[in-house]
Length: 504
Image (cartoon, rainbow, N blue to C red):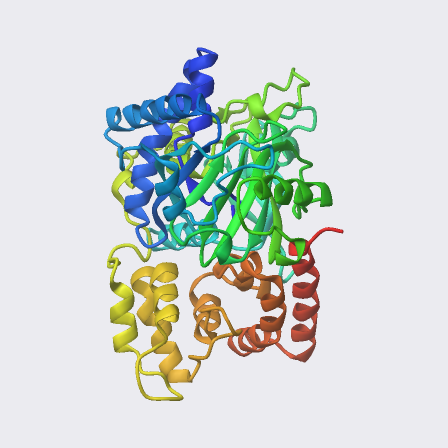
């Protein structure tokens, strides 16, 4: 949930498959995703935004091909009342003004003929995840972090009626009873299904997506670049994100694990692929962070194919014979529809009455009072404890974007506790955020904060390493850690950070 490509999209590639393979399932997925794209941009206004993306054309025949594809994308979006902005052809000269580092010619000698500009959404995935948990808690849900299911409990008829769980912080185990148990564990869905019945065939295949973080000068601050087909046929992209550039490719089979890591071959491919399309001298020493994410794809357990590219991306909701409900596959863009379908099945399974789903128009925590110029209010209303005057504008923009209308709570902590300093030079995260996240956002470990509440580990490994001691100190003060616990958390954070280092 934190290692995605950060795009909220209908799926241009899925639309291509829908037409060429006459696949209604792919078309339905795009149609549904376009609607959910607009919903997500509205319900999470502080975390999601519109992103213009260029598709470069170095062959003349690519211009009508990509233009027609994007116009079909527009048509579907507006047909579902979910249009954002119209795509258009952009001449090479205009494209180079908008994206100055876009190569005017490739190493094979072909010159840029123009680009096709289209629009999708972009968001902060890990903060979206946390905001959804906080929104659920406000709505009355009991939310528990670091709680592992170790067994499913059943009644005398063999129907699942709860779970045995383990608190991974304290080690304590306890039972939770339920009318219906919903298995929404992503790539680990099969592990939970097989807790109930070891003979169940697996239905989830993991697709790995590797991403590299590069300095901001690799791309402009508000325009992305996607190449639909590189030398080996894979997609490669460069997208601006939180003051840096992320580059990557997707769709290679991956092993299901809690700590996926990129390989040296993955890193070399991405750097080599983007070097054909940018004027920047692409260097391994420029890499700030590397991460690999796993996405669950629902497959037919009777088939043995490992080709993740051709598996349909639609989500699956399944009710087992023992009453266990599983929702899996899908993608971030359609998370809300996945939840709606899953809860509808839960209500039906448990014979529970409930009204219609209301989340289609339910702003998440932080979005209600957010507006595009909120950072100015944050800057003007905050007095820096160690010097007079307004807060640093970059810090104000970061707080407004990351926390929405809750930003004032962080600045209040900073004022009252004199925690307004940046955690590390060159990045806008401040000390007060550590205290706020530990108190209000289920933040239990230093890497929770550095990777999943702020995104520092994804943006800059070396800066994260410098920030760990202060983060441990602040979390220790807030959560009451002793000396040995602080030492233990420091060692764990440094070990986890190695997952983001360049593979060798």
